[in-house]
Every structure is written in structure tokens, then in C-alpha cells.
Length: 497
Image 1 (cartoon, rainbow, N blue to C red):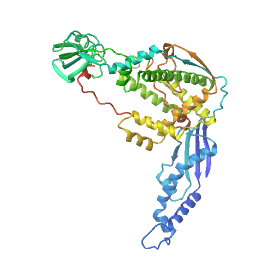
Image 2: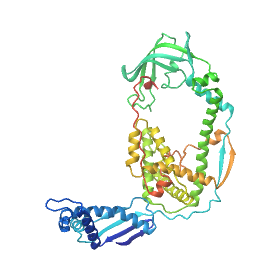
Image 3: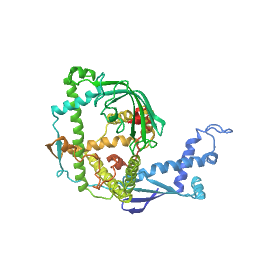
């Protein structure tokens, strides 16, 4: 086998591979000899079929299998021999001339093909002794715990019927029928619908007009659906609702005690407080973690500047751009509405994609050198988490990860990246700083991994990072399974919400 480099431009490589026809013929003859004792052909005793006859009958199909094996296996061997890693699956091109292909299958000419790919750049790791981060910490107070418990207790609040007029905070039970231009519309009717006045569940103006009603009242109210209402047929239109009030109930007082805890399925109020405190601390901890990680990534971004494989950048950009356009479409907005242009947005997100890929490669190299590994147990937990996110689609999810090349990397990548960050945090200078929750949550709306977009006035919402360390290092791009679209609500109260 002759291997000749025909292109070395930046990270791009092109390799010409020539396998002499004598070698192809030798491999063909060996396979024919192996098949001689296995095939059964009428007129010949087992093992006595002449090789020439086998070649005539099966030579082309065996040679076609041989060509496929060579094309699938040799590029990997070539890159290994060269000490290179391909950013994506190498591209293999062969002759498209039918006459030439026929000669190859008949072992009458050399088998030539070209392997094209981009290499993962060599990254010389720099000392991390200069890295330092400030870890913001929030102390959870008793008042905050009680405040959160009161919000939780709303779900267990009881109501007692009353004879007086409905006031804000009361629960109204009613039947209603909505109409637009005198015609009832889909989803505009309900029976025994319950609404707590002041909850903001229904469209603006609906709840306000129920203040003062009593059980047994019949009333017609008029409202206007918001211009951005999800149902386009109702958006911006005026509607009337014929309402029959069946019951008005006042809210019972909330008391934070063991009885409340029992209603929530918890053994005691002390245990309830313990659980709520832990949840709040976990929420703050997640924000702290992301801000610390952002600091690390920003510093690594300044430390490492190198050419990135454009195939990886292109793939990451397409992921970002697809999400950006989806967000704009769902919100009914344009780039101009967001204070930018499509051209400027493309340039910004292209830079974001390059940063993500570059930092992904850096983190991958750090992790590899540090011996960071993702265990099978961690992968199983990640898969289980995916299954939990898509109830009713477990089979589809399992099939996706089983059959889609590179899909497992989408599970492995974030785990690997977090473990690399943990490794760095154990070795760099970390200073804890007590802050208020307002300070902690300030300017933390992006929550990106391996990326920080350039600041831009009223830029569209940033897409969550997807290309992680392992994806970038291994050149794998696996699209995560998508949730099925939720069915449109049919309950009458949903149209009023």
C-alpha cells in the first residue's frame, strides 16, 4: 500500500492511497481459497470446486466486500500511523468511472482512493497555576425558607364556601362560554372551572371583572385576547364570556406546622424545612457552579488561541443557528426586533461556535492528560435522566442511542466536561465570597458551557452550548432526541388563560 500526502494546508489533509492490483488479487485469491471448502455448487463435490470457477461466479462480489472493508478500515490505520486525529469522519473518494470500477472489481488495475480530513490541532497545555476564581456563596436564611414554604403551601391551601361577594384571593367556581363575534370558539367553554382571583391564570381583565360576584350570579364579561396570544385565531380579538357563578370560597389561613407537612407527604415541619433549605441551597449552588465555570472558561479562552477545525465549527454554528431561528419563530420576532441584523447575528454566533469548539478541545486535552474518565455507571445515570425527560418515549430514546452513531457522546460529553472542571477546581486558587442572592443571580441569564458570547445590544437569546469537550475532540455530532410536541389544550379555561 502506497500512502502519499497530497495536501497539507492548515488543518486540512488529503492522502492518496494506492493498493497495487497484485495485492488486491492476492487478497481476492486468499478469500476464494477460504471459501472453497464452504460453498456448495451443483456438480462439484465439497471442497473440489475449482478456484477459477469460484472466481467467475463470486469474484466481483467478494472483491466488492474487500473494497468496502479497505475503505472503512484503512483510513483509521493511516491516521494512527501518522499520529493524527481526525476532527470528523474522514471523507473517502474513489473513481466514478464505471469502466475503471469494473477493472478494480476484476483485479485488473490498482485500487486508488483519496482520504480527506481535518486534523485535531496539537495543543500544548500551559500551567494552570495562574488560574483563579471567586466562588460566590449565598447564606440561606430562615425567613427565605419560610417564604418558600408558604409558596409551596399554596398548593395545599383549602377553601371554605362563603355567602358574600368574591374578593381577590377567593376561589370562584363557575361555568362559562366564550364567544368571538357572537360565535362560540374551540376551547372557550368549561363547567365547574375553578379560578383563584388574582392568580393571573386567565387573560388580562377576566379575573378583575369577577371581583364582587356571588354564588348564583350570571354575568357577561368582555375581554380582549393579547396580540401575542398563542392561538392565532384569537390573538388580538375581543371576546365575551357568559358566566354562571356556582360557588365563592374564601381561602383558609396557611399555618406552617406538622399538619401542613403531612398534607405535603412529609413526616414533620422540621423535615419540610430541611428539604426546602436543601432545595434552595442546591439552586444557588447550581448558579454558583455556572459562574465559577464561566470564569475558568474565560481564562482558558485568553490562554489558548489556535486554528479550529472548520468542520466542527460549521456543525456547532448550525446547531446554534437552528436554535436561534426556532426561538425567533416561536416568539414571532425578527432580528430587527432584537436590535440586530441577520448578517451581524451570523457573525456573532460564528465567533461563539469557534469559541465553543476551541474550549472543547482544550478541556478534552486537559482531561485526557489528567486521566479523566466517564464510568459506565455515570453513562447509565445520564441515559436514565434522558428517559425521565421524555415520558412515554422510552423505546424511541433507547433506539436512538442504540442506533445513532455518536449519540452516546452527547451523554458522555457534559459528564466529561464537568469532571474536568472539578479537576481544575481542585488545583487552582478558589476564593469564597459571601454575596446576596440578588448579587449571585445578577447577569446570569445565559448559563452557557464552554462558551461566552460577545456582548451585543438586544441580541437574540443565546442557545445553550451543545458541543462539549468530547464532541469536539472526537469529531462526533449527535442530535439529541426531541420531545414530541405537546397536544393543544382543549379545556375551556385554557383559552381564557
